[in-house]
Image (cartoon, rainbow, N blue to C red; front, top):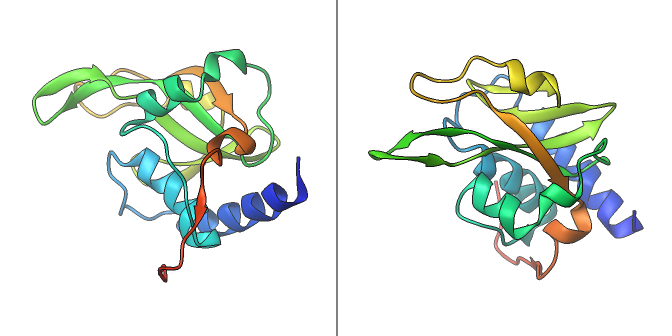
Length: 150
């Protein structure tokens, strides 16, 4: 991995670890992983409006082996939001050794295969692993952000 992306990944993972146990990201798994990169690195990244849209945009089905550190790890996950039932997906941030930090019932760490066994919210399906996106792809078209993030 390019050194710049290694630095970004480490900062994102450190920021995310600071949120372990937090319940501030209900049904906002994509916002959580994007915030990890954006707030820790003062950058703006661009993906879809849901985890599933981002997975499709990043073509994650091409990457189904063990994810590298810093990768976004994606899952199919169907449920209802605002009376619309569809595959919104689920996403977490790979920390290494198969561990993913993600927003579920709270921000937590699970092995990327074990996420498939989590109990979903009422009316939702269990997540099913579909692949991952490397940091280089997540950062395609990114820009430095001059706004101050908290």
